[in-house]
Image (cartoon, rainbow, N blue to C red; front, side, top):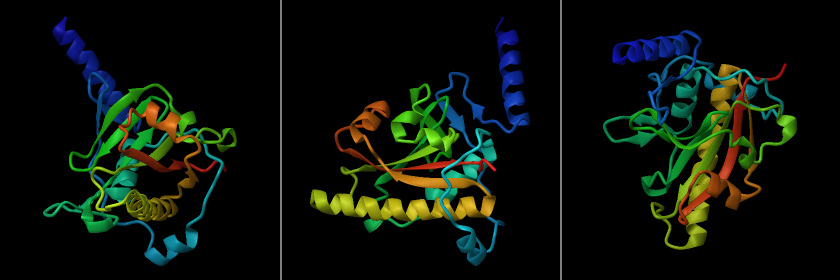
Length: 218
């Protein structure tokens, strides 16, 4: 039975990879992402020219490779020796985390391990404030600040620093989407309490903004 189960698991994972899906641990709790691509894409000025917000999305899912590249571009580690990221943060506190919310569940992006770690099961995309007119974007990125990790001394400073860091991450995503011909749009969180509950956040974690990512509808 063990050999048969292992064989079936291997077949399922092979099928996922063959169809551009994500390689998932057997219990579904951890998604190991492919190594991100760190070269190529549009020239910077062309990406800036193409940058825009789009509110209508195809339901076509992102491939494992696209998701890995997206998250790395957003706030991945671009200097492994120091752990520095693709976006700046005040005093290098790196207080903002990225949660990827999909139809299958909500996952925390672990940049060091290049993995997504499940924090909740089920489709929680409605909690991100995505409007019905968005057409069901396959991925909702939620930017969450941890005030325990912030370099700010007052709550006002912590919110300011987190907002600036998040803004830098958001622009990275916009430029990535422009380069990869993906659609994206950002929104202020409409119901932080509901979103925090869905993602099982602590009292020191603050959902800053959300960002939809997917293929354009047309």
